[in-house]
Image: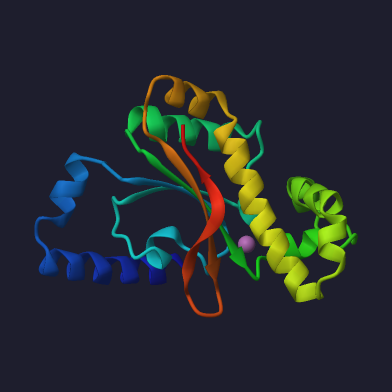
Length: 197
Ligand code: CO
């Protein structure tokens, strides 16, 4: 119900205003986030909340299963604006264990409409890592595929002309792969999944 959202909004705005009267005027005047977050659209993984950040502290792009498609104009334009417009130097690709998109990519059942097209790169990862995945339990396989999808996303971001140009210009931009656990709320950095100039 929109009425419910409006009521909650009024409560929230009043609470912020009373705790910190400077909050809205300050944010209205300037957007200066430190992070660009590329994450899953899953309702349980809101960037600000799980990273403990306030409004204004993170610029966000989310899609089903945090897939980085090299031709996704939505993601690429947000990435370019993040780096060139907002001056962001920390890009995060964050996946999460228990991701429904990754789970769907673990099976050959195609019953998800357009989502099947969207997650095709994750299915491709599953096929290219067949050997490694075959010795695992279904749960371990899903978790590893979550991590492989993040690593592939980091690499794809690093290969964009946007990052290549930023690095060629000497900008200290870093791309970090991270993973979030729905089970305990813990965000971790994926080892070896950081790309710098
Ligand atoms: Co997900």
